[in-house]
Length: 342
Image: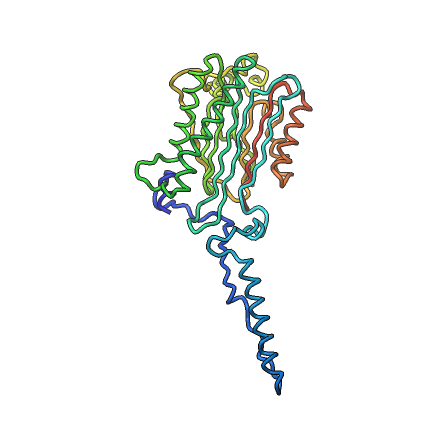
């Protein structure tokens, strides 16, 4: 898998293998059919019985051959390839305007690509959360443009080359750099098209068991494992900077009048510093992306509890949004939960 070394930015000793849960389907109709025993019949009826037995054998072989996946025949149903649940990346997502605002300036995107082929591609996921800022239309447009451009760039630079077996080309960028370029292109577009708008963005690409997270602003990414919940992104906000300088406590930051002021976001300047974090996702690990409309209203411990209680990530998304709305829902609320196979 030389192309994976290149795209993941790994050395040869960290080469990724075949995705967990991939099952190769091979059918051979002739080997699956055993001929019936030769009938022991005396007299003129022996030939007639032999012909009936041969006809039965041929019928059984034809039936199995018709149901087999051979060459270019249609792929079998998913349950044939994945006999047990949880062997593929699963995700849920939900965005809600909240209880106060009339419009939703958040934008989200989620996609999983999974295959079973002799190329042994790993599963791939692309997930983006953007929280727009500005006037009524400017914030919506900025987040929408950002989500669309980031997703399009990742698909163009990672997924399409994977499908064309071109990821091993020597001049192809590592995945972390692909994400940086994608966010920078979104920043350029917002600066040019929506000068009064801006947005946060937290974008994740999962390839195999590696998660790459590009981040600007105060939307967040959390990793939830057997060890607990961990915020893996750093807020680019004024209050977070004051906390890091020991000039403000976490409790004071929650009530600070400038807690929503960001010093880094898409649409603020031409040159954008993009944080990129790489994490290996353990089996059954979960990644949660959200806007501040969720994490401002629902504590981390509650977020962890909800995610753990639901085997279906979509149900967990609905409960988290409901909790934020029950506590006032003053902002738009967006959440994506990605569940790794176990």
